[in-house]
Each structure stands twice: as C-alpha cells, then as structure tokens.
Length: 292
Image 1 (cartoon, rainbow, N blue to C red):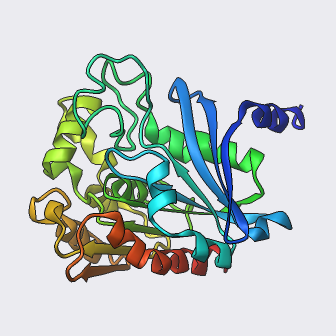
Image 2 (tube, one colour):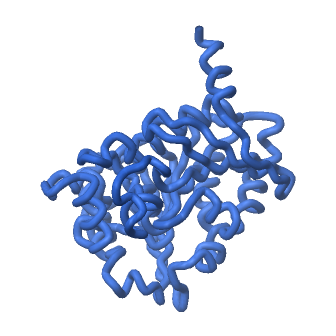
C-alpha cells in the first residue's frame, strides 16, 4: 500500500508551466486541496542538484493580494537557489473561487488574504485553512512528488507571508531549520489588518487570536534553536501606518533571548524591489542551516 499512495499523489498534480532557469526548472502545478476544498496552485523551483539527489525545501509565503506568481517573477531568487541547491516552494495566498459571499469584496480579507490561519468562523472555516495547508498538506505533497529531504525544511515570507513564516516556525519548534521575513506583520492582534482578518476568520474572542500572533507566540516559545532574520524597509508606508509593529516582536524576542537579526534598510519600501535587493542574503541565511 505504501507504494501506491505517492503514485496516486503524482497523478493528482497537474503541471501548468515549466521554464528552465539557472540550470534548473521553475514549475507551477495545480491540485485539488483537501484542506481548502478547492483547486490550488503552487510554484516549485527545482535546482540542477535535484537531478541527482534530494535537496532541502525552502517555503516562501507571499503577502496580501499575491498569487504564486509574484515571488517567482519579481524576487530574483533563482540564481541563489540554484547555487545553494534549494528546492523553493511558493503556494498561493488563499483559497480561490469558493463561492463564499463577500470573498471578493476587499483586498485585505478573503481572496488573496488567507492570513495563514485556520478559520473557525462561518462561512470561512470550510475553506480558509491556510495554516494547515502550508504546514501539513503542502509539505506532504512536496515530499511525495519531488526530490526533497523531508528533514531539511525552512520557511520565509513577506508582509502577511512574513507573519505566516514566523508563526509556522514558532508554532512548530524543530520543524523548520530557519526562518526569515521581509516586512512581516509582527503583531497582528494590535494592527488594523490583523484585527480585520482575525475578527472575520477567528471570531470576536481576541484571546483566540494570540495563537496566530508571532509577538505572543514567541513569549511561550520553548527555546529550541531558532535564528531569525528580518529585513524591513525604513520608508515602508505600512511601517509608518502601524501595520507591521516589528518593535513589539523584537522586544518579545529580546525578553526570551531568542536570536533575531533585524535590519532596518534605509530608503526601501514594501515592494518587490526591496525584496529583490536582499533576497540573496535570505537564501544564504537558510542555506547555512539547510545544507549544514
């Protein structure tokens, strides 16, 4: 029986595109997600090293309004991933086309704004289970179908996805070898984006929100090794608008003596131009742990 399952999973993947890039291949696949009860797309970059053996897997979580396309077309990560032999996986940011009333009404809630939580409220809870999707279903799918080493996995992301990366690492000690983020939403229970999303997906009881807030999670983190890298543009409008709140997270990490390198980058904003500038540093950060 154990031999049949991976083959069934393979048949369940539909390849949408494949492009050669820095000696490897950037591919996009579609599959029927069990957690999200809809079709989902994800991008996977297979470096040249994947032709001859299993590689570590690095998961990227994108921000509000993004699909699997933004990161693979704008960040310029491919050369560094090719050189370090990393398989890089970039899922979509939410379920799509679920037919939920209101899912298309705003850019920061619903479609393109899954916030990497498992919703508990109607009508969202049947589909909006992005936390379980990115921490369980997607890795199982990747492990079954691609030449990756399941024991070597890391996560990074941007904005809403930076929040996602931090909570995935903090809620699963030892699962990810490293974590990094660009301009993450560090304390969503205390910012407008988070309050809107968490109120809608998780309900009115704000004590339930803390389970998906990096600043609160770090306070009870058991202290297994975790080396966090965060880059933040100093001219990011969402930083000055109080959406990101990195100081709260840094203070919580300092209290727990959890190592975090926080770099405030002069003149940079929230865009993919900022991400592209520092993406190689982040790939190196993860390669240090994934290839150790």
